[in-house]
Image (cartoon, rainbow, N blue to C red; front, side):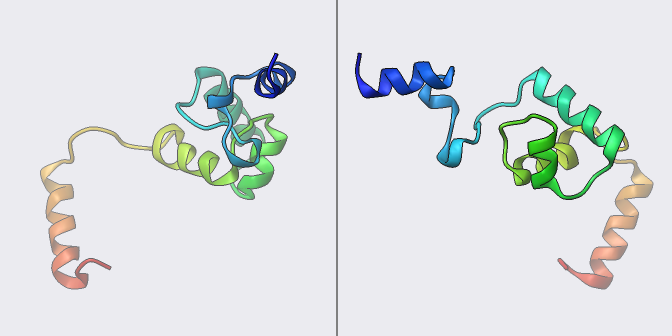
Amino acid sequence: MSCRGVMGAHMGMSWGMLGDGGWRKGPWTAEEDRLLIEYVKLHGEGRWNSVARLAGLRRNGKSCRLRWVNYLRPDLKRGQITPHEESIILELHARWGNR
């Protein structure tokens, strides 16, 4: 068996699943989402590198933060914006630009 085969068998994962530093890369699984949601429910947001480690995820803190903010946060609104929301956006953009 090659060195790569020994290492992959030892780690219990294929080489393509882990990136630099041993972090898992690629699409999130339903189990990872569940672990992140449960951890944030119990302990709140913040200190994302600690969240990744303490929740048992092999993801880096930035990946956990982005997954939470962009996909899992309970108050995240998805879908079409209302005409009222659009008028607010246009008004604020006229006032502040792209800041």
